[in-house]
Length: 616
Image (cartoon, rainbow, N blue to C red):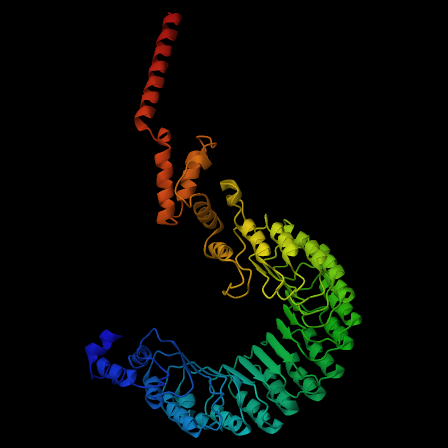
């Protein structure tokens, strides 16, 4: 980029952008206090750097907003622009003016496909009026996202007006974090304008009260044979029974929607849910994901849902989290779905439902013969040792389940977790991810059981154990021994080279350094390469020694040599191989081997001559 600026000087590139001299640019901006962009980033923007595809600009206020807006306006490489951290600027008139100047420059851009506002106070929405030329003339623009933003009624009106100026939008995400009053009329008008975008694939609205009228408009859009809508997410939208019934009429005639979320709409009662669930029996139904979290569902709704799923062959993911009013009858109804031979459910989320031991037994019993489920979340419930024992019996021979979340179930004791370790020891278990975080009963004794159960496990990649304060260094040491058994080379070779994480994120501050290093080896290498690295670092850490190979037969040694050198892991490992070769000259004494072959040949000749004399 520096060379580009020095070559062009003040000349204007073919893209029409005037590039200032790099030295002048550096002097001007390095002297600015509180600047929000560094010099290199400005050079990339104004230099039209093809590597600058995604740009995030965060506040608080710095210098040069007007110039940066103009630079972005002329840039032809940026595909995604993110404006973040405006939520602390409420009432700041100067900041509002700077943001509008910045938007005036951005309005000239014709390359940005996705415009995002994250954690922003959008004031009165004036920036959307300013951005109308951007929306209207930029044929590449496809996605508008507002995550965690304060969208006032005035702002929503200007957003709606801007969206009415073009019809090429494919995705819109509005997540109103703050509860300023918006009436259903304005929210319904937004929905009406959105349905004019014929290529719209995704609508996600959180805390936007669309009500009955908005549902009716969406229903009409869904019934349109030209509709391409694939994702519809409605969270906390002031939808009641009547609105749900109207929306159901659109869902029943739609064949493009595959992801539906209706969550935190607790005013929908049994009649409304029965109408929604009936669409799952429609021959047109293409739904693969259904999110019903936090709706206050009860047993009656669960029975309706189970009946609707009896003959459904499309739904793969079902989220029923945070519906604690469901009781035994509701879970029994769901278990009938899981027992159904034609069940195709792959992901099931039952978290935060206050499920106790007796209720979870309906689910675990159904899992014994279920062959479709690959992911199950029953975190944040009231599961006890008895329920864990039943879950163990259901999963010990299960060959399909790959992800299981049992976190935040503090009623399970060491006895329950010891019982569950049988699942990890099962040779047919397919579990790759097991989440046990925030189970405060887990201690060092439990850790030893869990670690030992992984000695021969080559499937589990993640065992999440963070936020378990009773685990000490002794508990982590048990995992270090399993991941790298230092007793002998063969023990190290047969250690666990599959386990990659004991925490969800990359920050392993709770873990000892040696364990972090071993998990990183597993994560960044194949199992075979990880084994070689561990053998090298464990058994040859202080220099090469031939003692580990003394008992090997000579015909095995070449294979050991080849295996140690395979892959060119590092100079250190190659040095060990070299030392190994030097320590075993008898294997590679060419002169001695030639002499032995010559002696054998002479012996064969003498034997042949004696045989001929005897025959004569």
